[in-house]
Image 1 (cartoon, rainbow, N blue to C red):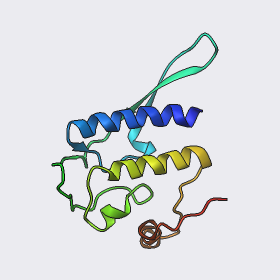
Image 2: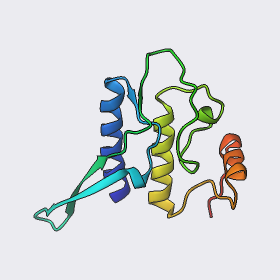
Image 3: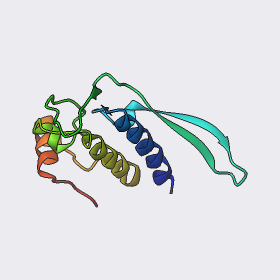
Image 4: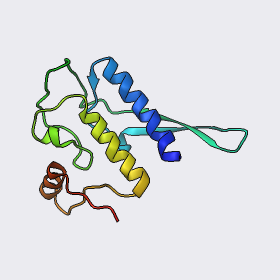
Length: 128
C-alpha cells in the first residue's frame, strides 16, 4: 500500500512534466525528497514526494526521439542505451523505482557498469 502511495505521487509529477513537454531522464530515489506531513486521524503518516535535480532534463517534441545517453545505470531505460527514446523512458525509471520499493533491491545487478547496462538492454533481471 505504501509503495502505491509513493508511486502515485511520482507518476503524478512525471505526468505534469510530460504535459509541459519536459523529460527528466534521471529519475531515481536519490533525486527525490520526502516531506513528512502529519499523521492522519487513523495514524497513517502522510508524506509528499518532491522530484529534484533537473540537470539532465530536456524539452521534447511529440513523435521525435531523443538521442543523448543520460541517466543512472540502475534506472536507465533500454531505449536510452540505444540512443532512440522519448519521454516514456521516465516511466521505465518509475517501474524500476517501484521494483526497489517492493523488493528492496534493483532488478538489474552487476559488479561492473558495462555488464549492468547489458542486462538492462537485454531485460535480464533477478527476482527471488
